[in-house]
Amino acid sequence: MPGSSPGVEAAQPADTALPLGRPGRRAWTSRLGEYAGFGPALILFGLFFLVPLGLIVCYSFWQTVDYNVVHDWTLDNYRYFFSVPTYVRTLWATVWVSVAATALTLLIAFPFAYWLARYVPKSYQKLLLILVILPFWTSYLLRVYSWLTILGPQGAMNRFLQWTGLTSQPVSFFLYDRPAVILVLVYLYFPFAALTLYASLERFDWNQFRAAMDLGATPRTAMWRILLPQMKPGITTAVIFVFIPILGEYLTPQLVGGARGVMIGNLIVNFFQGAQYTRGAAAALLIAALIVVLLAVFRRSLEVEDPYGT
Amino acid sequence: MARDLDIVSRRGWLTRGALSVWALLIYVFLFAPIVLLVVFSFNANRYGTFPITGWTTKWYGQVFHDYQIRDALTTTIRIALEVTLVSTVVGTAAAFPLVRSRLPFRSGIRIALVLPIMIPGLLIGVSLLVLFTNVFHQQLSPTTAVIGQSVYTTPFVLLLVAARLQGFDASLERAASDLGANTFKRLRYIVLPLLAPAILAGALFAFTLSLDEFIITLFLIGSHNTLPIYIYTQVKFGITPEVNALAALLLAASLCLMALAFVLPGIVRRALRLVPRRAG
Image (cartoon, rainbow over all chains, first blue to last red; front, top):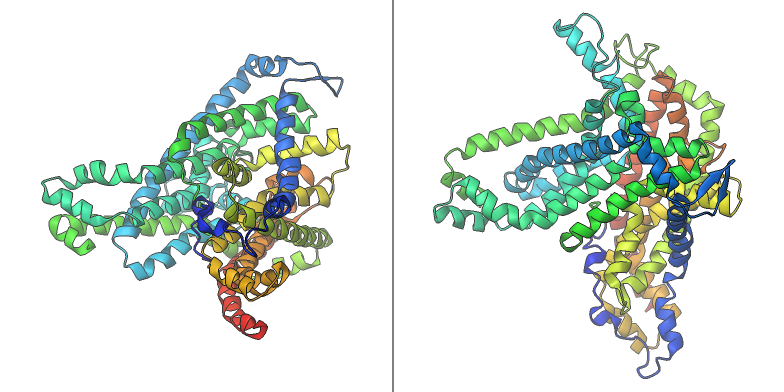
């Protein structure tokens, strides 16, 4: 990949910060010039990312009266959200689906990454890894959509079942329920997990594994006591980068989840499309709060290094 | 060394075989939906799925003659070009101080800059919707979509350029400075040629991401359509072979662009080796 990046993580000041040009002539203007590059980014991320997020926080504590937002500080939006049993159920279902999908993604990705890092010759590893990431670089919408042609009533799965004679009528069992949502989520986020786990397995020194076994450890003990502890940062990164986007999923439950697969993202969209901005903001903030808690918990062991395989 | 381990573990070959089967299944899992989508786009049957009744390219013909699709394509490309411009300039400019200056709160700034690609796009979409409609009282348009998408694509450019800047030999610049090159000349003859491959890759990333972006655009595009939004509105009424054909084209486009993003930087790097010589 271009530059095979160590990412911003490694962006330490080091001696590159030594001033260029003639020494001794570094006035405050030149130091300002050093930071000038941040200017455009400050506008883009400040005005169009941080300010809007702050706005959502405010909105979640304000009120909508006759389609106008009134700046009265109140907890009504949250009270309303938690007073409707369907919403509360959806919130818990979202957390549950996200946990299940994340766990499943990692469990599926781990043996794969292990195989790739340990059994595949070095010269093929890169190619096979690119093949895994390839679907990830195609349209997100299309990757969800493509499952409709498999899971739908006329889809590949039903055709297969009818062909084998297991069913005579198309069953809609696959589509429009939580299992379908989880399946597609695992599909969508698998490359993230495979990539991060592979990255940490690749760095692992297998001699340690052998040493452990020489000292009498069974392969399983060696795995639990030597390999997994060293993979902890990689696993944490994988969990975060899979779990967070799933929390805010809208499209997957919308297209393959149907009425029974609703997640909180769908609620938020409904609120905003119904011009209930303040209630929608409260629901959005619940997701944001979950994310902040997660990041705070894992901050120490998070590697922001190149999560996209760039 | 993997072989040594296999001798130690007697069931090594069994594990290895099982894992290989597992990996194969995963590749099938990853590619089956995409391959089926393309297969269905050539299927003669009206319903866009099984059974396969014959092969045809007529759905592709219909895609090219649909004026709605052509409209959406124009909007999509216009937005993608603007997003590419914005994120390449902003991302490249920000990479310099990020890598080179002695920043206070470095880790905080780093996380803030990666946050837009970490948090769900849904949050970016709704928060910008509120900003544009309720605070700026702005009509939603392709321009608002450009801003929303740029928030999401710029960090990618930033990461790529920062990585390249990181592995950049600062003594080259110092040498140029010693030989009397001013800031502009150093930038023009030393820094930019060396960074060009990364900037180019970043631009291609941004373009592809913009082309395929869905959720942020959904909130900010207003009454216009991009291709993903058009496909989404069609899919709500069921699968049609035209949408399959359009989807296959869009898949092909993103794959080609990404392949370029992988290959082109190397080519540019080789071509640009000439530049410093000419400048010297």
